[in-house]
Image (cartoon, rainbow, N blue to C red):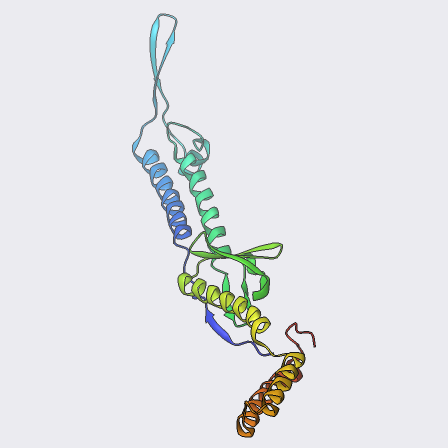
Length: 240
């Protein structure tokens, strides 16, 4: 059976990941600016120590190129730009990984299943009759719990609309599955109704016109029911 699309999720940018990337870039740029400033403007680091005869004073004067200075003083706590570089690189890597994974998510809701892509581009198709729960997830996402699995779709701009559509479909699916059990006709019950109507006709309670109208109505329901069975092959759980 062809699936009809009910709603599609609109992808959005991962703002927290973007902020982390910006912080990483700023830290990297700042570290190079600090290193350049120290190399150009500072004559050396002044230090104090205690030796024989009291306190003594000494300082280090840089007399080499910026590249040598940058490498040699990378882990110097007094200069601290090396630590900024390491933190900046970590922030940059984490932000890029978050951005690439979460922004690849896609979700499409049809009248029969939830289709789409999870983080890392994994494609999924979850039938509606297997869904047991639906919740909000991180990064403005949707978490769908199905039989033996949890699927998280991140960065969905129209998160609320998609969740409402899924909830509506689930509610209607449960209602429609319960409805035929209460209202669909059976051959046995309809035959009994026809017999009772014939008895009422013979007793003079019903006229021939009333009997014919009721008979036509009952037979019409049976014809409709058999047409549904022949077209779908599903007897809706009824025993004849």
